[in-house]
Image (cartoon, rainbow, N blue to C red):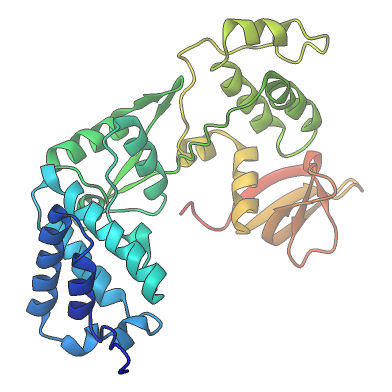
Length: 322
């Protein structure tokens, strides 16, 4: 008995897949097939080529073209069809297709803007944002305007930055919305314990700020518990509605300790003038980091000794904020 021949290219594969697909999916699968044919490169869509490392990228591009060709109000339909096809190709034919590359349909405003805050950690243009989300240009404009002007989120006002470099406009975010769900014991450890353990270290000032920011979002009951704690570490509660998200540039302009933490985070170069402990001063220059053994001490690459924070006289960043 002759062995049944399997599909040899994407068109034979789609034809077999369509037999089990819904009527609506079949419509979008036909549009996908037409998009592939229009490219005029059938050799790129053989099963062998598609299964090779990186070989499925042309197919993913064709899927994106099929989705974006649909009107905005119904883009979620070809998106659903492409997601189902993608899962089938990945499972049945071991094709390397990344579902994250497909657009996102996030109708909920808050969830979409939260996703944008993370996506904009590397600057993006409007065109890139329209490719990522299934939204109209008007909805994108509303989202970007809200995030630029200040979007209220859980008691914080969050903002993104608009950058214009030679006429190329992009948007950037340094916000990292964690949205941790904590019990009150964990809240107490963060709001009261962290500032106590950070005393005398490079993190002292920021720990106090984070404590106030956490407290500004708590319920009256939680605030009462913290204020009644024997340690008294919950003092200085920030009034509700007064906490604002701080872009990194603003934070760095306000605090030397913030610069030290930022430079340590990025291992960037700096010059530190400090008291040498013998009545004189010394200078160390190199990449800065915070000692893992003692957060009250700084390390400079190539410098033989740790520098106690209290001995720092002048701190000069040698690399600008990027």
